Amino acid sequence: MLLEGWIYVCEADAIDEEDVIRFDSGSRSFAIYRSEDNDYYATDGFCTHEKVHLAEGLVMGDIIECPKHNGRFNYKTGQAKKTPACEHLTTYPVQVTDDGKVYIQID
Image 1 (spheres, one colour):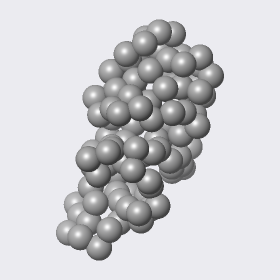
Image 2 (cartoon, rainbow, N blue to C red):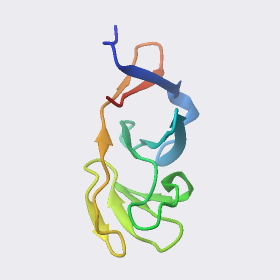
Image 3 (cartoon, rainbow, N blue to C red):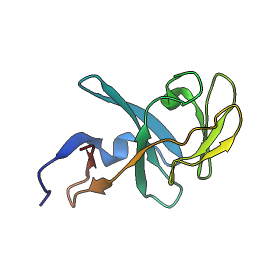
Image 4 (cartoon, helix red, strand yellow):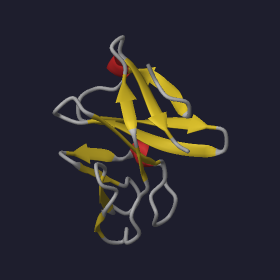
């Protein structure tokens, strides 16, 4: 049972292992990740350097690389790991229900 404030994103199997998808809700955009350990994570959807959507980037272990200037972030913590990305990403709680639905809490 989910608490109030959680938003449905997709079915869990819609995200491949070590992949990322784009999720938009209202005027906000998010990046939703599935790690090699089959855990799910969510961050702001845009690179903090030039606002390119991270879902177009490359997932390498715990790192997402921006497709435009190759700035890197740890998607589990949001920490900027390689310039030109210097500002960290905001991360959001993710929950996968027993019936395989992915939700994020954005408020």
